Image (cartoon, rainbow, N blue to C red; front, side, top):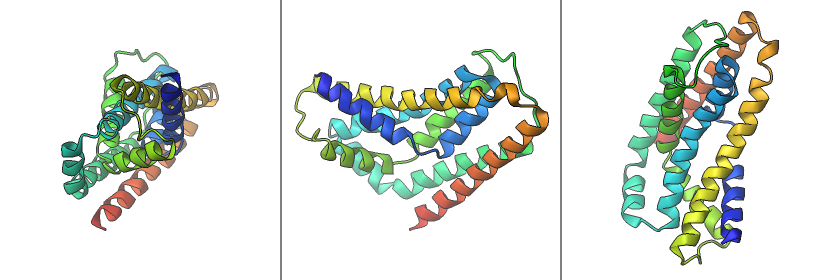
Length: 204
């Protein structure tokens, strides 16, 4: 049981490390509103990861077949989400909101945006299936063990988002409006580039 949980944690942490679109959002939210906002954003991505890990771990072939058949359309949806987020981030010259609350609309939108980015990446399920095979989790037959793997993956990815949010929010005191605007533009450009790359990759 503990071994399954531990492997899930490791897979989740490794899966979360590449700083893509959700990483850019987490950094931006952490700089703008603080640690909690960054973690809430990452939580959206972790939930999406758990959905795909659940599908892969429990062998839900019907869902897997659907995602594979509609992979191009789903990825195009993710491409549009990322492009819109990049455009919105780049056009705003907003100041740091040092007094934002956890119930603010921007935090809810951060969570939803990250979830949409994660859930519109059907290729994630193939990555999880490869990881399950590599770590010898394909032989897991117990539903409880499979559930622990999924929980571990969620906790593992969330741990990474907490680390990233902590690092980014730690830089808030060094930020003024000019520096924040510059970082915002860089992150927006990253999102736009990623959106274009995902759109092109969906074609092929």
